[in-house]
Image 1 (cartoon, rainbow, N blue to C red):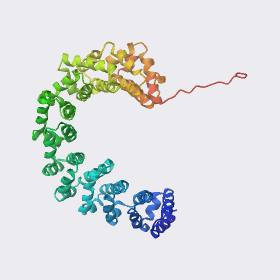
Image 2 (tube, rainbow, N blue to C red):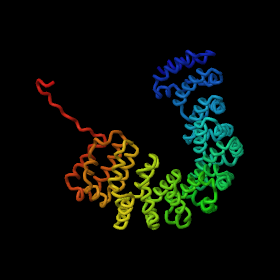
Image 3 (cartoon, rainbow, N blue to C red):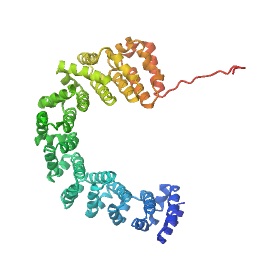
Length: 504
């Protein structure tokens, strides 16, 4: 079969408009394993196929792309880089996006190969074409180009090629195409800068990080909103946070939040700025961040206490992030009655807000109440119990009521709340003493979709694996939980029927 493919390829090369032969070649290729094609790789002459891409015939181009994709998969990345460099070059500037995407997929294979990537680095014209693909109208083309350039920059040679040659000018030129393309370049720069302190140094020396920060702290509120997302990505890394702190950028972001009250357009960028500090707190130290930047926690509380559903959603998400570890929980506990009031509000929103906000509130509640067994102390257990009781009157029934609503996402989010507290003795006692609650947990007929079955199984697993469950639930229910656990999330009890003679 592989030999037939080679013969068809020769036939295609002989003809000027070989549509029928291309269709036959495509069909034949589908039946040939890649391993067989690899054995014939030396006999594959792909030049004619690449030449056919230059015509204006749509079907011919589509067929060639499909065939080339299969053939190129059979070739080693080093071979492609060494022998098809001109074809790659032409492919990157082709007017048909499908051809560009095919070419970039091969570039992607090459840059993943440590031996082949040097071939790309020695071809500045090819790198230039990849850079200009960032300005493509089709997002998938731009994304593929960004991914390839990011991968190239993982090596010292790649960093030097991109930032210490005329390619840097090309990068700056492509930024002038439009606002959208400029943000794509910033995305690439942040991706590269996040890899290591050395990578960050190359990016800062290029002037592009400084330009990003200048736009972040500038007067255009929409630009601010976009730039803060990229700066947040940089802050996930230790060296990125160090840079932002040393350059005074975190202080500048804090000052902008301080001045937001007098800015009528602050709603455009404030959510992103608050999320920045929320993420900063959780990867760094919640206590230190909240003490150094008190405006952050103050603004979160203000947003949660307000009436704007968008701001409430961001505040609730941020509280969930902040309270996801013990240090963050203690920071919130220190705010006293104000946080207690917020818990009541969140509990109310979880039942009465829009479906999207309900789910966000339930997710935040799960995060706030979750307490791993190895971090459980008497004080922390009293705190989570108090928080749970502060959410609403009879909170267990409150969330059980939400879980019975005919929306799988809400059902799963409510089950997550129960899972979050399932390993805490006070919650197990509440569950056991609530009429019908344990039966509800082990009742498989309640869940009908995969996500709900998985969520229920996680709840059962959290209970069954708890060290206090056998004592609190008693042996009978403990064994039922263990049986549920061993049967798995999708177990269906078989119903046996007995045939009776003469029965209709």
